[in-house]
Image 1 (cartoon, helix red, strand yellow):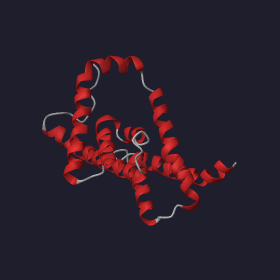
Image 2: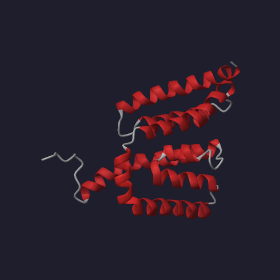
Image 3: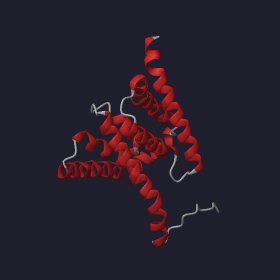
Image 4: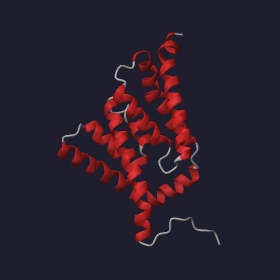
Length: 182
């Protein structure tokens, strides 16, 4: 009963933000619900420093519910397709992950960024964004601010890419419309 009392207000607050973000993401798909959730969270964090009775539920949602969501996301994968694709592209996948982690490490040394933030940005940019960050954070004992910074960086660059890549693709001859099966 104590767990419910300590976490329910924060969980409900996160659910309200998630619901609003989901519907905003449906209205503006190029931005998406996840980016709206990050932006709303960032705005709230600027003005609301002391979480009080909401803190326990916010922490529980950020750590446990997000981890379980990543696990359940994996259940939707077609394992046969993953195996075939994975074997064919394993060298590219390994090279991309290694390059991303090495670049993140080098930039962190150059800009004097905490190693945890470097690791989180590296896995977030090379694997699958916020999901990879959420899965990696507890393993490296990342602080909440390191996770928030890393997710913000990844989603910022996702938005930039979503706005720039279609134009860039058009300039080099790629189509922005799906091919029709013949």
